[in-house]
Length: 359
Ligand code: NAD
Ligand code: GLY
Image (cartoon, rainbow, N blue to C red; front, side, top):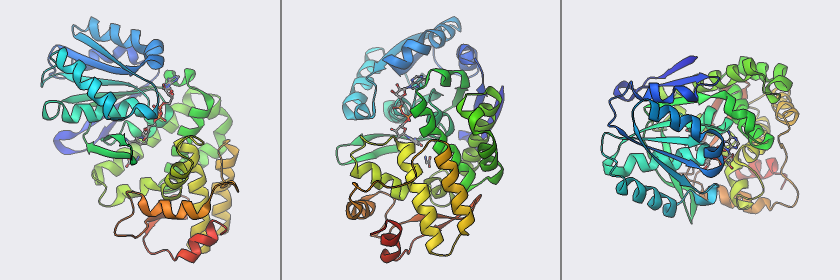
């Protein structure tokens, strides 16, 4: 089992990565000073696959367990589902020393983390992420939240988990499209931070997509190490953490304009990473050969790289100004200088942006 530490003073925690480690959940819980009541939040699909093994392990370790099943899907990451979770926790009399466990993808992780951060002014929680995206990104770093009718992830907190437990075996049941969307975030870590990781994906993409266990362990471990290092340096995104948003300025606009129905997050981010690399090239920040490498890898991993002609590009631009990353009407872009190094740019001339979008 690999162990990566997120260093945040008295809020530091471990990320444990291994195969078939769900059955260790109970033993790991016992290493904390939680009260005997524990609540696990999941959805029907994930609970039917992994609920029993996790629940049994928790009960075996001597805890009383409440299971809260929420509906599956981003459209349920909202205040109504949150209210349902609070109701269940209050009825069960979960106390301030209790812990919540999030078993699922990023949706379950985000809403459970938000519930934990607000229930009785904040209780502990543990992430057991079961999608690749959640394992390499959303379960680490303490961003929690729900969506608002007027915008995605608009209500949230920074609240770090006490532990992240990643069982890579859970990826065997994940739909390929979901897996590839998670892989987009791994490619992102290569571009923003680690050329060796980028090269590893280039050389091992068939193995990774075929779920070869050593390759998976390597990319997940390396992604978590990078995220842990960035979050340790800048927990609340006042500096370097912003680089995790590479591909997101254009990517989020694509998701908004297509109403979150056409692309998975990782797919929209893939188009965003390709276009933001092209933007960097137009600004002479990066060599064309590096941009080709970025676009080739995204393409070869079965991810989209181009903005389809039927998407309104004017709408894409105006949507960028409504993003929560835009401050005082200024867009913020993370632009690659080369594979492994990015910079933050705030003053991009609109005509270059239009040229990037072929307007
Ligand atoms: P998701 O949670 O919706 O999961 C995708 C689908 O896979 C769901 O249908 C889910 O039930 C299913 N699933 C989960 N694990 C499975 C498994 N092992 N086998 C089979 N099916 C499985 O989507 P996601 O991509 O994991 O997360 C997206 C969410 O994460 C978004 O809400 C996004 O805003 C959030 N997010 C948060 C952060 C953060 O830092 N907090 C970062 C990135 C994304
Ligand atoms: N997913 C971006 C972040 O955690 O900052």
